Amino acid sequence: MNEEDEKLTEPSEESLREIPEQDLSRAIRPNRYANLRGAFQHAVFVDRDIWEHFGGEARILEVLRLLVDIAKKRSA
Image (cartoon, rainbow, N blue to C red; front, side, top):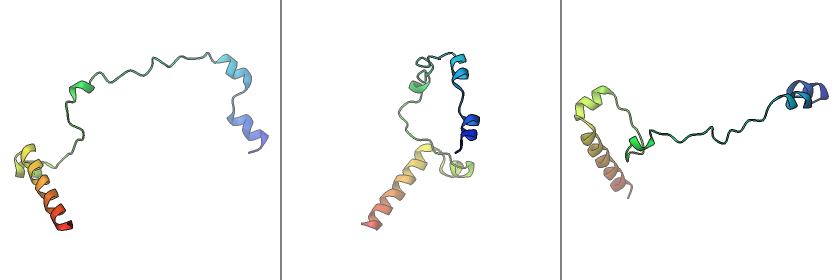
């Protein structure tokens, strides 16, 4: 990087003095909706036809757990 490039990318000391300092310590607020989330950790989206075939969340989870058990038994 040569001196000319630095002049284009780095702000001058004069321009830095013109910019007031900002206190951003209070800018980040906690997510006020986080407690509404409940206990779930991950979200999975399934196509409508899969949802309708299995009839809902409980059945889909049951089938997925069965698949995990089968995969564990086959790899053991």
